[in-house]
Every structure is written in C-alpha cells, then in structure tokens.
Length: 234
Image (cartoon, rainbow, N blue to C red; front, side, top):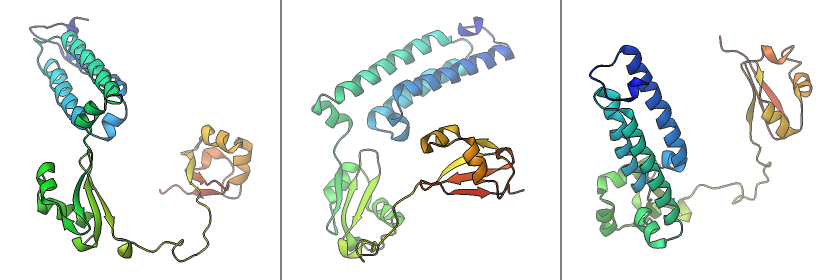
C-alpha cells in the first residue's frame, strides 16, 4: 500500500494501482452525490466538480503527494454537498440561491433585455438557441425562459404550434413502449417478468425466425406482447 503515500518515485505498477484506486473512488463519489449532479450541472455541482477534479488530479500526477489526504478531503466535500442539498430542500432562501427561478427571455414575442443581462447571455446566443428549436421568427414565441440548468425552454404561440390528432379529433391507438427483450442471444429476464412470461413463451414467439434464443441478435417487444426479431447486420 506504499503507493497511497507520498514517494520520491513510483514504479509503473504503483502508478497503475494509484490510477485504479482514484478511478474507483471517483465512481463511488459520483454515486454518493446522486444522479441529478451528473445529468444537470447546477451552480453547486459546478463548484464541486471543479474542486474534486483539482483535488484528485494532483496525486494522480505527482508521486510526492499521497492519495490519503485527497480522499479524506473529497469525502468531507461530498458530505458537505449532500448536507447543503438536503438543507436547500427545506430552506427556501438557500434553495433560491442554489437553484434560482427561471428568467423570462422572451415574453409574447418581446425580448426581455434586462433578463438577458441577468442571465449573462447575448442576443446572438438567444437566436442561436431559437434556431435549434426550429423557430425562425421571434414573434412566434409566446414564452422563452432561461432555466437554472443553463438551457432555454421555448414555447410557441398557440397558432404556430403543430396540429395534434386531438386537435383534429382523430382517433389514435394507445401508446406502447418497445423494449429490447433479446440482445446478442441473451434474453432480458426482467422484461419477461414484467410481462408475466417465461423463456418458453419467448421461444414460441421467435420460432418462425429462429430455432432458439441463442441465435437471435436482437429482438424487441411492445406492451401488446408483439415481438420483432432483427437479423445480425454482418
């Protein structure tokens, strides 16, 4: 365990062990912080990401620095992160600071220049985001808001929104979700359990295309228990 401590030099094996320990430790740290901090980089998440990256990076590149101190510091920061997140759920003032309310950037076709300054974004950036939403005329926008996560949500005026089957009073089929049930010759037993079926039922469903599950590259199933078999694209 000498690779944990500061050394004058590290062997190749010790560098590898230090990298493996650091990698696994970061995986556990990210898991402890929760999925939201990964999927949406908030103000607090940004601070933590910068700090943790800096703390762990140094001992992974400098043999004179030990891993122990960095890992202890990281654990303390994670505890503080979880505590602040928990407190923010119960104290509106802290929540408002960490997760500020959305800012109106466009209201009924009118740009809110004051809020553009608060969000620190330019008009060019706003129009770029509108183009991504296939909006070519700002007058068509009923509302555009700057979200705490750094994205822009755009809502068109009702007369410019696409028609739906409900608008045209067209009868539609219920929504069904298609999921993989066989991947590279292996059946997903969890999906079968949710359907209340077993491997024997699945074999019967694919019998017309393949003799058994092991020969199937990919098969999907929907909520109506319709199974679609796909051939191997070799």
